[in-house]
Length: 235
Length: 168
Ligand code: SF4
Ligand code: FES
Ligand code: FES
Image (cartoon, rainbow over the protein chains, first blue to last red):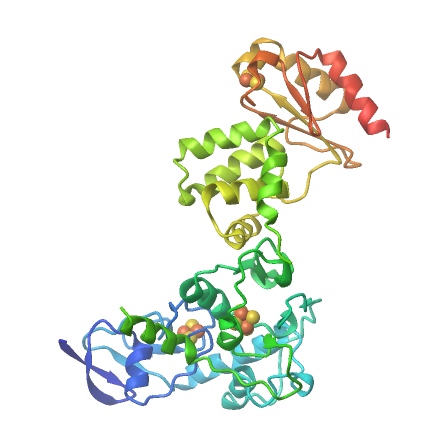
C-alpha cells in the first residue's frame, strides 16, 4: 500500500493512504476520545468527541469521518480540543437523565469513563430533565431512553451487521429518540430478530439484558468487528 | 407472539379510493425505495396527514424497514401523523370533478365554514383539503368525507353531510 507522511502531535509518521485520521491514530497509539465510533460500523460523526485540529483548516474536523491526506499536520490534544470535549461531555449528561448510582452499567459505562477523562467535575448547563420512556416490552432486553446519548451504534449494528433494521431515529433536535419499527414497543417489533447486537454495541446502560442487576453489565462491543471478520473468513 | 401487523392494514387500505392515488405514484416511481419522500408527499396531500394504515401500506409496497419510514416522516415538519381536524373533507379537483363542479363545492364550503383548502376550523372540528383526481372520475364530482366517498354530490348535499358530521 502506498505510504504518505503526516505529522500528528509533532510526531512524523509514514502511514497508509485511504484510512481515516482515527484509524491512523489508533494504529499509532495516539489516544482519541470517541463515542459514536465502533469498529466494524460505518462512521457517522455523530458525537463530535473525536475532533482534531488540522493546520490550514480553521474548523475542527471529526477524526472518524476525515480521511488522512499527505502532509497533514494534525493536533489531537490542544487546549481548544480539550475544552470542546469537556463541553460535549457535559451536554451528554445535561440532555437526558443519567443517574450512575442506579444504572446497570455503573463502572462499565463509556459515558461515565468519558466524564472522568474530560475531568468533568460539574455540569455548567441546565439539565433538560426530559420525560423518557423505559421500554421493557422485549422478553430479554430493555431500552431505557433516559440513558441514551444518540450515538446510533445500535441503529448501525442492527442495520449493517444483522440486516434487521429494527432501530432508527425519530424526530429531530433535542426530541430525537431511538425507535423500533413505527415507534412500536420493542417486544412487538416485526423486524427485530432478538440477536442482541445492539445490546453489545450500546456504550451506555441504555440497552441491557433483563437478567442482570445494578453494576453487573458486561458488554462486548468488539464482537461486532469480530463477527464481520469471521464472516469474511467463511467466504 | 409477534403478528405481522403490516398485512392486515394493507387489506383495510384497499377499500379507500385515495390509496389508488398513492399506488399510481408508487408505480410511476417504479417502486423505488428512494422515492419515499415523493410518495409520502402524495399521501399527505390526499389525506391531509399520514394515517398509520397508509404508512404501513407504503412501507410494504416499497419493501422498506418500518423504522426508516417513520424516521423520515418524523424528521420533516411538512409531514404530520395526526389528522388536522376531527373530520376531514377532501374535495377532488381533478379534471372530471372540476368539470362537474368541484369549484362550486369548494366555494360553498368556504362560504359556510370559512375554510379554504388546507385549513382547519378553530375548534379543530373540520379540515378541508383538495387532491388532483382520486381515481373515481365516474363518480364526479367526488368528495371524501372522513372515510366515505360521496359520489356525484351537489354543494348543498355535501354541506348538509358535513353539518351532520360536525353536529355530533
Ligand atoms: S440506545 Fe445505546 S447504542 Fe443506541 S443510540 Fe442510545 S446510547 Fe447509542
Ligand atoms: S467518534 Fe467521531 S464523531 Fe463520534
Ligand atoms: S377527477 Fe375526481 S376522481 Fe378523477
